[in-house]
Image 1 (tube, one colour):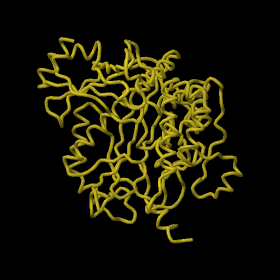
Image 2 (cartoon, one colour):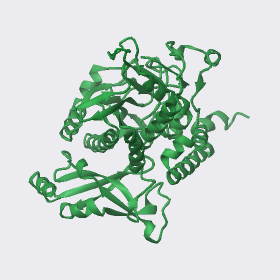
Image 3 (spheres, rainbow, N blue to C red):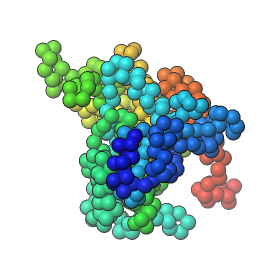
Image 4 (spheres, rainbow, N blue to C red):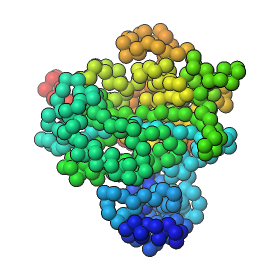
Length: 450
């Protein structure tokens, strides 16, 4: 601890930002002087438990205190906050790991993989909007971002280079491997692709990315938004995950999803090994419950539809299918990995990835088959044609997704009793509040209609 404190002092750090993630995927934390590093690492920074969404903790007694115990390996000086270093914390209550801490949930899932000698690696691709307030609402921050098909627009990305370059620079200085940045399919929408890493590290990186992007956008006079679908006629923001399973340690790791021939050579004629196909089959089998974690807001289901948009398509999967390099399916299979396309930008990375692991392991344990590869453009088919092929639909609203989650013992088991109960209750309340809200659309359509 002394060596860590000395190195941070030498780097000009005087304060720690001890942060964790609540049930909704929102970062929380507090500032702690570096002099108290030892306390943060051994006991944790204290918080009022019931003041944190989704804990279900009492207002009195020993279980009212939420201790955020930091992991030394996650400390990173923040380039946009000179003198401050962020450090990721796990939740503890009454001296024990808190079962409803999202990071603890993912760590439990990681431990299940480790029992088999496996490690999950994930590359996350968050999409986001840069917005500004306008006439009581929101619009893209770049007034000139108006192309009819804005995908990969070089003019807009050039105008936003000051923000994107600063974001890339600070993430790189924090140790994150940024592969690329681009303008996405909607006005004001961008994407960052991160290299794959251990599943827990990838979730931590996603939360650090949000922390950095929010601060830098404010400095540039913009609002960073990970709302799934801010504009009705444009594509929403996804958070696709590229997934592979590995065994071994350090430099001697082998990708379990890579297919091999009987002579041991890599089989380039197939995309996934039997284990990889079983994992995918588990994801398909638990697609409804996983959608509650991957698309956890009422707004999410305005993204998970198929139809036309200004770019030609929404690029959001609505059908439970898998296929080789098929971006219209829920799971896009590639050589030695797959892309899970359901998650949107509002998802809690720890919970969605814990659910993914539970689903994949169930597929492996039960030796499930993902069915035939789908090579059709599912967006071009009618709903009747989809049904003829026996392809199921993802939940069409948050209430349906929560029903699927509540009925799924494997995914709820991964969350744990407390978190599953709190998450389901919170999301049922959210859907009820949304269903009871009278919108401007309703007033305009019905106020004088009858």
